[in-house]
Length: 108
Image 1: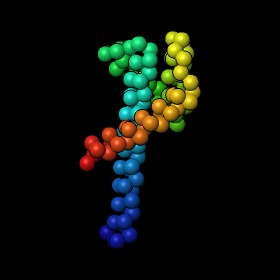
Image 2: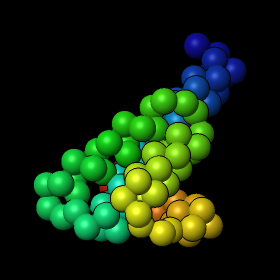
Image 3: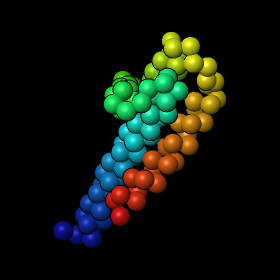
Image 4: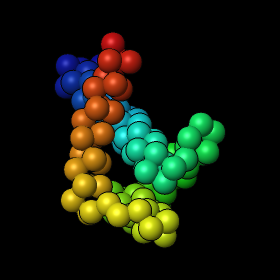
């Protein structure tokens, strides 16, 4: 292999690793968000964990965060729990930061 081939392979490996880490962080964020919403819905224990799982699965509907937002905001609204869009989106951002830190510390 040439130096160019080695560099190309290294970049491909780095890209694949970054994509995998982003996927893990997103899934972790969605689980944490699901647990946060579950608490607001009055769920705990296994019910809260099961609900968090549905939030993780909801993210597989389309790319981006809108599918997750629609899921949790719809569930909150259906149960009569008042949480603003701003609060949900702020929580999503904060939990993504936390999830990234957790995933990075696990990979070290």
